[in-house]
Amino acid sequence: MDSVIDFLKAEQARGNSHVYLDEEARVGLRELYVRSRKPVAMPVEEAAPVAPVTAEAVISGDSKAAKLDGLRQQAERWVPAVSLGSLREKMVFATGNPDADIMLVGEAPGYNEEKEGEPFVGPAGQKLNDILKAMGVKREGVYISNLVKFRPAMPKQTTNNRKPTPEEMAACLPLVMAEISVVQPKIIIALGGTTAEGLLGLEGTISSMRGKWHDLSGIPARVTYHPSYLLQSSGSNQVKRSLWEDMLAAMEKLGMPISEKQKSYFLPKP
Ligand code: URA
Image (tube, rainbow, N blue to C red; front, side, top):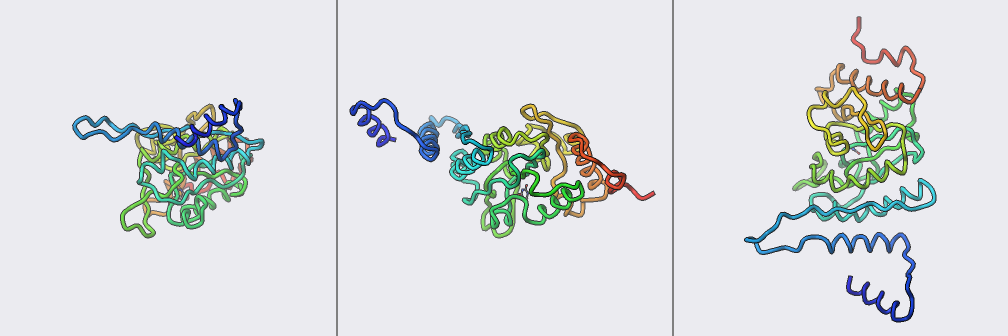
């Protein structure tokens, strides 16, 4: 920070009142600013509660793709998340169509997603692909993101994953909100109760959150079961039907054609 100030003073002394900042410099300066606001450690007796490090995502660029790329670059070094020290290093951003009508949001990348650098590519991703196929939608046609952009860390971690904490979700929330404001999807689908808590601030059981429309910055948002829930033994036909009814509601909202066959998926056999 001192060298930046020295540089600016030298420019001023030379009679320059403006300096041009490219995107990288803006991100770097923002990081310095956020870091400079981080509370300094105090003696234990006087310790004040440590305020969470917050930051705003900067949206700039000519096209949606350029804006999302700018957000991806900021996410790589997202100080509020990195400073928690509870997330792994590799950043996993989003995938899909920046002009999508449907945006799906999951919790956080897991082992497979970290390895591939793309959300929902493991077994839960396969389930999600099946769901999209049943809707008659291509994976490349929707926008798929995660609330938390780094895999939550665990001691001696191998392929095991954990859910993100409320702090981890709060740290990354500005990024996904910025993605939403760039993509401007017609609907948002929050996958799982943890995502719904972090993204929509909902509390309670998933059954109390799903089956209705919520509002997220003026965009209709639906909560449904996380696709990984379908992989567990508890992923009964009833759960599959409930998830499918959320998808039917999404299709109806978008004015998509729905066949009689689609309407009947996972209904109990007469
Ligand atoms: N679960 C999630 O919530 N997101 C992923 O990307 C993968 C699994």
